[in-house]
Image (cartoon, rainbow, N blue to C red):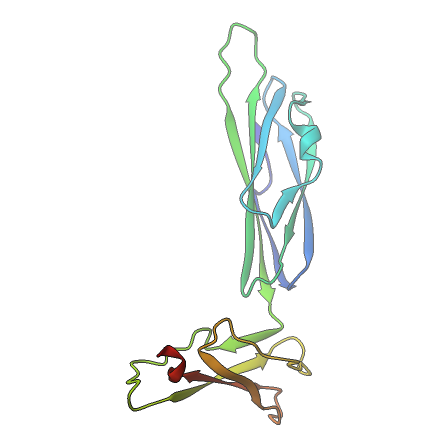
Length: 188
C-alpha cells in the first residue's frame, strides 16, 4: 500500500491568482510493485505534473515517488481547494485478481482577496411599478490587500440597472461606494 505523511497540504494565506506547488512523498510499503492506473483532478484549478508519464508506470516495492501537484487560487474569494485522485493496484502474481485502489490528495489555501464587495447581491424588494420609476441601492467596495485600489469603471449585466457609478472615493480607509439604480420603466 501507499504510505504518506499527510494527504492534505494547506498553503495557508495566499493572494489571488497565484500558482502554488507541493510535493507529496508517496512510499510503496507493500511487498509488490504498484501500477498507476489513472489520475483525476477535482477541478481545473488543481493538477499533477507529468501525470501522463505516471499512468501505466510501476513503483517498486519500498520505493518513494515524489509527486508534485499544483493549485491555482484564481479569483477565489475566500478558499481555494482541489483534490487529486490517484488510482493504482498492486502487481501481484498473475493468478491473483487485481483490484484498483485510490488515494486522494487535497490542496487548499485561504485566499487573501484584493477587495470585498458588500452586498454581493442587491434585493430591491417588492416594487410597485405604478408608483416608483427608479430605486437606488449602494454597494460597498472595501480594499483588503491594496488600500490604493481604484475602480476604473462599473458595468451591469442587465439593462434594468440604468446607472452604476462610483459615488464616493474620499473615505480615508479606501472604501468606495457604487450606486446601482434600478429603472422600473424599462419593464413595461
